[in-house]
Length: 456
Image 1 (cartoon, rainbow, N blue to C red):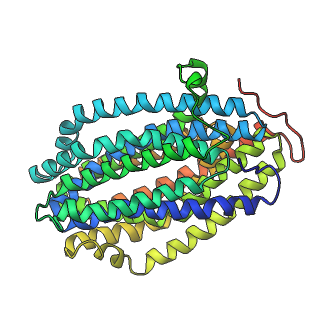
Image 2 (image 1 turned 90 degrees about the horizontal axis):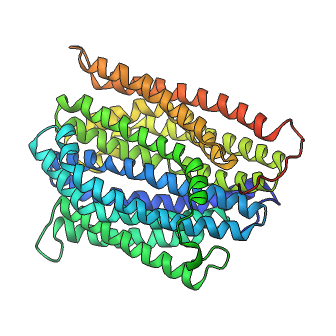
Image 3 (image 1 turned 60 degrees about the vertical axis):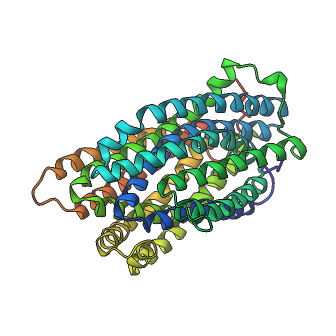
């Protein structure tokens, strides 16, 4: 375990954020490699992959329930030096991971055809999306065990093993993708099915690697057969913290689904452009997300140790750093956004759509940095409902205008992107306001000392 209740806050954030950022870069490459090879199959395949890939937001919503709850509780337990409680949460998290995997497989295979039939711009797009989902679902189900183990380590202040596994897994996926998708070396291209197969194989290997690490090297949180009997009290604690962040990702799933539904009349080129632009945006967000991911365990350990001044310092340091990074990224995306999109496709209609999306949407980058920071802090203090409420505010204020706009004869795609920028700014303001209130409630006045939270 890494004790982050002592020493410079900025140092702890940087020590965790740098390897997290590296891992996220490779994780994004995971998707970009698939995107590159699928793009060579045509607009329908690209649109199908993008709309089907939105299911990953829904799966990520469930992984967030598991991951955030596990990380926050183990971070607080580590801060108060309660190893027994940390191990209880870890092992119960693994039990929940098995349950979540089963739900993903049953729900995914049962609803994939209906989902793609609702969003696909044409029959070819629908078929490509269904094919991809059928083959990627096993990998998505295996992610829960991976998230459970990685979140446990992050709660104790350790991220390097998880990053190493991510890097090696991405390398494996990069090797498999051209073989599976394009048929390199085999002469048997599998198309979008190959993208799903390579992802599932890579995640399976990652789960095996993390299991070996915990069996042979991890000493603070360990597998314990005596703790795998389901304990509702532990589940309630994990879910109480994890459900709201999971709801945030579920709202993101709904947001993206609304966009795909709204723009389906513009054809597969528009859906493909949005899909590529969204993936590029996610890649651009990596530095900010890494800092937010590091903020939560640093603030969480200090919350558990009853050190309010260090909790507040973590928030200030994260906010300043994130805002500066997001401002620079905004400037980058304002220059020549088409360069990012053209890397994946030479279809001018797709490039134009993706570039316009990226250039307009970049105006909300600083606001997203604020949202990321506040979300990490809500996780740290163990009260994540406000972040969900802020996300719901954004969805409601976006969905209603978006649906109305889609019915207007003068509707253009840029109108949708501007609406998104405005609603993210609103979400950032609501998040900051609610976090300020929660910090006063949880931490008291500046300089006060609070008792460490109990595991109850």
